[in-house]
Image (cartoon, rainbow, N blue to C red; front, side, top):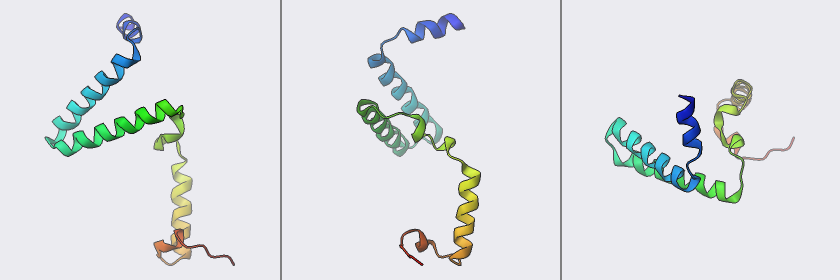
Length: 95
């Protein structure tokens, strides 16, 4: 299998990106048979391409890399302090 992956790395990026996006759209459509899923996939593919052209690093945009347990704990703490009012995140109060 290593030989196949090495050959895949020799494919130019300008051909590889549209092929990956096409397969992702086919997979997204085949799950629910819903064209909306294809549109969402295409939109995120376009956003990814723009980020690539702007030179943005992909790692910070990956939500799996954020410290989720710490975020959940602090969200829970903030909601308890505000007595369940979510507008506390949109208002600035200085005490």
